Image (cartoon, rainbow, N blue to C red; front, side, top):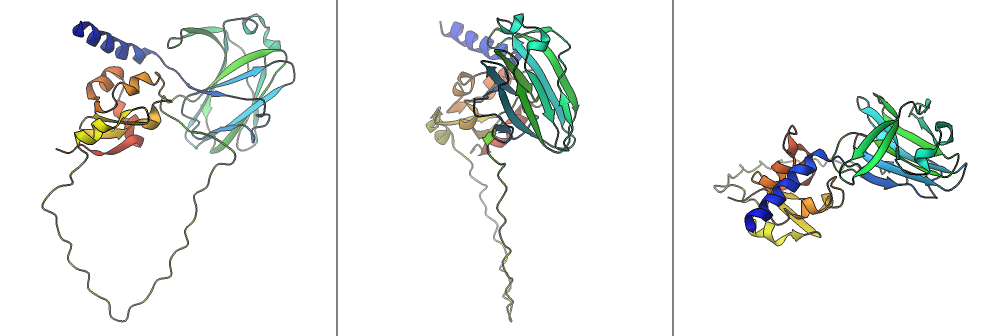
Length: 277
């Protein structure tokens, strides 16, 4: 029985490798301008921005920040269900993207390609796509309805956790430089002492204590990561992170991300330190 359960877990983890789920962002009735709407702090990270309308001339808007050298990637999708799949192209909401320099682009709806989102088993249609080099700054996205409808915009391409904020982008506080003091008789600096014992690192006992959704640490390749912030935003769902909380998750993590180049790169933001030997 234990062998069957273990195999089921492995196959589940391997299966999620083929499921690509963008992080959801739902636009509300108050998101009527880009300034009022949410800001995707890193527009290269994959988000599924959803907008629903009950009548004509309703507006939903949001922003995404990109850097020079990034790629602006946007997909316009509808779910294969009424009323959206029955509407003509000229009845669907319009999307206008305004670049940091002020250039405006209206999304062209010039395809109808089926796409099965395997994680939720939801069938979509791609209706339009944009993929081009980005300017540095914040892009504004404005969606205007023509009839009752709902759409999903795929923004970004990197399947890693991302931040969404409202209001202005926070700027780091500037700390005034301290006025240097001049000493008449400088004191020689003492010779640094070298510790004979290496840095202890984090113990397995400390990791085992963080085994819940509210505090989730895991060991991967002899390093300790705090995955608490990743649980709710993990593309495969929270269960795949909670499964490795409080334990050595090396094998599970590698099985889940097999075939991907440098899978541990996405863990860099969650690193706490080395595992104590």
